Length: 146
Image (cartoon, rainbow, N blue to C red; front, side):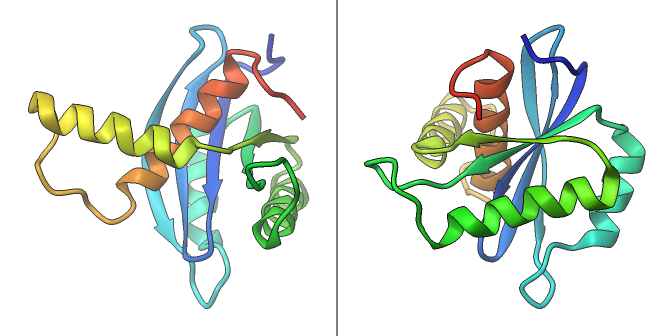
């Protein structure tokens, strides 16, 4: 069981970072927002505001791996982002295997659109925040920890 009550989850990408919030007691998460990078870097002022607002106990960052589990270019970027979170906020950042999280997120969004609970058009970044939810739920449910 995760040692934190409130967690922020991140799907870190080249251009954006999807963010979700989760509760370890309930074992649930929900997508929050997607922030675009500024000059190739996270939008730290917006992340500062988000962290101050939600006051998470811990961070969970998706770790991009190839299908066979091998590292790729984005693997080190995600690790660096997790290290930056620790350096900036002094809260642990767990890394979670994020293989297939984007596929799962897109399937969830498609199902929500088909049921009428979301608009028909996919907004830029919707799948990133939803992927962050999938990543965070994986950690909250105790599957595939670092």
